[in-house]
Amino acid sequence: MQSAADARASAQSRIRLELLANLVRKDLKVKYKNSTLGFVWSMANPLLYLAVFSLVFQFFLRSGVPRFAVYLMSGLLVWNFFNTATMSATGAVVDSANLVKKVRFPRVVLPLASVGFAGVHFALQLLVLFVFLVPFHPRTFGPQLWLLLPAIGVAVLFTVGMSLLVSGLNVRYRDVEHLLEIAMLAWFWMTPIVYSVGLVQKHLEARGLFWLYMANPMTSVITAMQRAIYRDPVKVINGVPTQVLAADGYAFYLKWLGIAALVSLGLLALGLWTFRRLQADFAEEL
Image 1 (cartoon, rainbow, N blue to C red):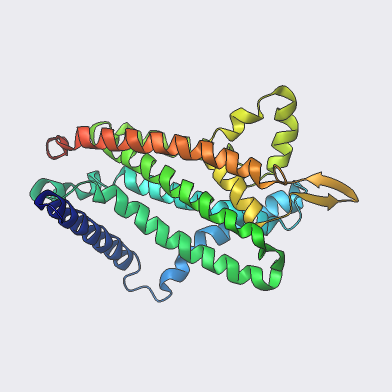
Image 2: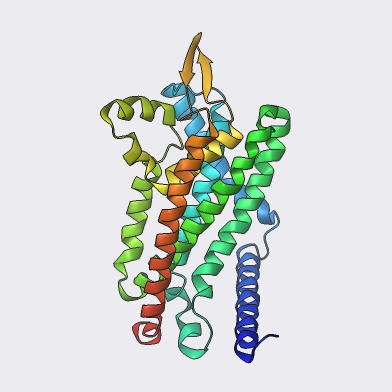
């Protein structure tokens, strides 16, 4: 039989979920209000990246990655989810100053709504990508696609942890938002989105530093996404077999996703602890 305390906790959880869903729905309506194309605009950013990076890395710099568009999009979409959610969550509490000062509600739903908003876009963009892959890269549709589930799960976990941490800190230290913008730019180039992870492995493994590169949780997520969607770890380029992805076997990806999941859990605990510790002063800080 459910105790009174359990019933109260269950009711509070249900209220938080309803509030979170309403905030995500409101953000989506506000963003596309009076827009003719609506969600189609969510593809504008990745399509621009696709055009620019394809031009630069496939035709000018000769990256040597066959079907570069598929390789790029398999990592770029999940990166955009992480980047959009984290940057939006950073200012989520500050931008809702009037609401925070006047209404009592669980503040934690504000950064979580940013993650939910970015998650809806990510799901739609992934759906469009798979529609594109049906005629242009049918090899994607194989048994390796199961890797998407743990990769996306770790990405969500890591993003929620980061969002809670930076949204709480940004209320007290407003430099966090500006610092994060610079950090995200550097972070983008430290993950194998526009260049081959096989190339990085070739240079760093000989020096014993490849593990340090893979310790970045987003690198683990993106390499697993590439293995799931791009599929072929080795491509024949100019008659020479060339390692494009990090490894053939699933064990490599599962090992690094497992490490990234542990890091993400630690970050989530730190983010929750920091947010709860600081939220009592939000009304005064804003």
